Image (cartoon, rainbow, N blue to C red):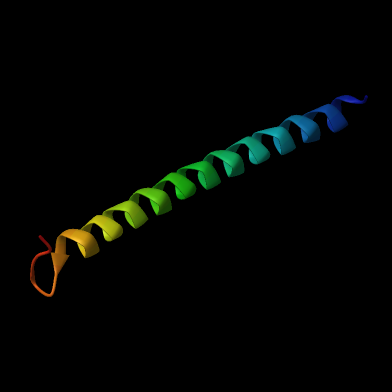
Length: 51
């Protein structure tokens, strides 16, 4: 492999790693917000506690 190709490969690897990190954080963010929304809907129904 030529040095230029190796540099491009490393740059592509770094970009893929950053994208995977972004999407894993986005997934966690969405899951946590869905759980919080579900809890809010279960606990507070019609403006009062749902018990």
